[in-house]
Length: 249
View 1 (cartoon, rainbow, N blue to C red):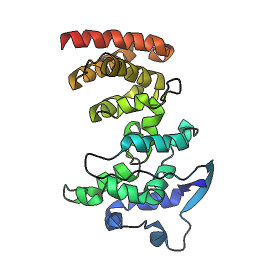
View 2 (tube, one colour):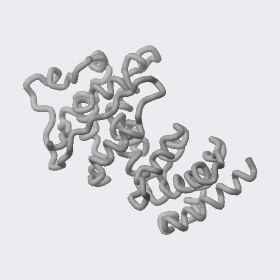
View 3 (tube, rainbow, N blue to C red):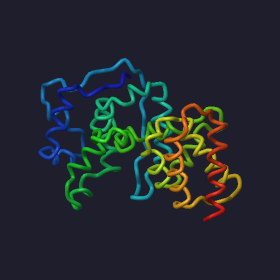
View 4 (cartoon, helix red, strand yellow):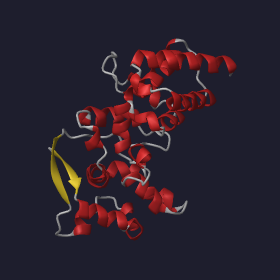
């Protein structure tokens, strides 16, 4: 089938009326056809995809992000970064193709209790205003982004580093919300050294150590052209700093 996009006018409509449309987000079935009635609100792209059957979360802690990342990224790994940054595609998927998954993974009822559900809807069903975090926060786009920054076809299991990325929530958040997260050589180098320590050497990397490593890389980016270093050079650099941090921990 062809991947669909929400039209520009339809996106503007539902995004500017989130507060008014909050009740729709409690619906058990997709509501866009009903909302727009006879109006055409989406259009097909030229991107051909196979059907993606996502695993449904079964609790607040068991949500199958790794398994679903494999499904989404394997199906859409050939799209360009420009295509991946198009909010219209992810808005369609969140509101239509994967509505049942979104209802289970990000139920609006849980946000009603906390107040300001419109902020949560904007963050999970659309793109938030912070473009650097939008792909990581959208309920479906995040699954693609996890794969994009960690998939390594040179490994026997191309998703081996993805498993490291998603093993702890703090790793994903600390790594992917940095300015350098769009550089896959950097993100995969970070994950490779964490994998080496954790899975090969059996050395646990604490949250504080990992955050210190992220701060170091941010600082390093200000004085070194990280983009000019190849993957092996980055791994050597990060491993040396990680060893230093572990010795101090």
